Length: 177
Image (cartoon, rainbow, N blue to C red; front, side, top):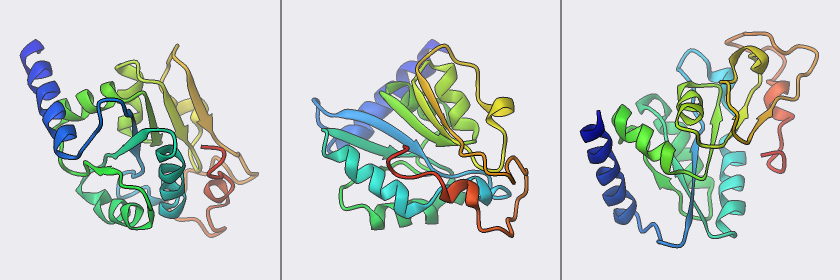
């Protein structure tokens, strides 16, 4: 409803202010996690941290989203990052997450529900794919978006455990993102 959208946006304003988000900074969201059954959809914490640090050189502030299941991954990303991303992991309701993604200039995500939220609220996105097929799962969007999928011979495999060392995710570089 209109009232819940307004209260979610007000919550977001306060949350960003609490985390020292500058008026002139650009906000980029990253959802690095995936459902607990799909760890193979997750890119690497160290690489997300490098992306965050690169973005921070351009007056960009990164906000990390996820569920309580993503808490350790997010803690690892924050630990590896030299800059200071905002940790919103498990701190939003669904309407607040929607408001947050809507506020972002770009949203970077694994193959997960927040990726679809970004498309639905018309936020440009970067989708990171490995074991699943983006031709089937990327949300339709007329906006600018990028799909990163290196598509080694074994992908898409739809496996929840990889015996080959997640080549599909290892091949995606920080520069690609």
